[in-house]
Length: 129
Image 1 (cartoon, helix red, strand yellow):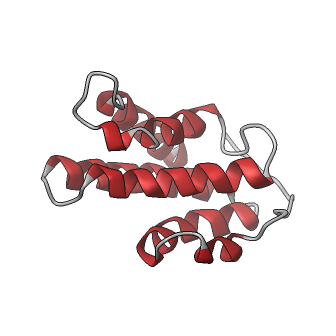
Image 2 (cartoon, rainbow, N blue to C red; image 1 turned 180 degrees about the vertical axis):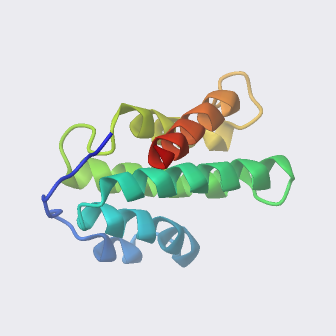
């Protein structure tokens, strides 16, 4: 599935650097830059890889879930501020939504980790076709 957009953001991602911690900014920046360049398939692939890495680190106890949540939250705010609809496609947006719930990891009403993994793998698999 090939997604292309030539739309420039109203607020370039670089301007979000002052709103978040440096670690969150540098994790999300490569994805945002791909979106700004119109490389939507690459951005989707990077989101899938990042998600699987986050989940592995969280499950191994090496990353606090709320820290990963902040990255999804920043990406969600950036997309909402700048792009109408689902520029990354429905699966990616569902994945970002689930990621914004990571601060509730391990709770009944928290994110569905299995579903996050499934969505991330779909994003990776489509890039291999």
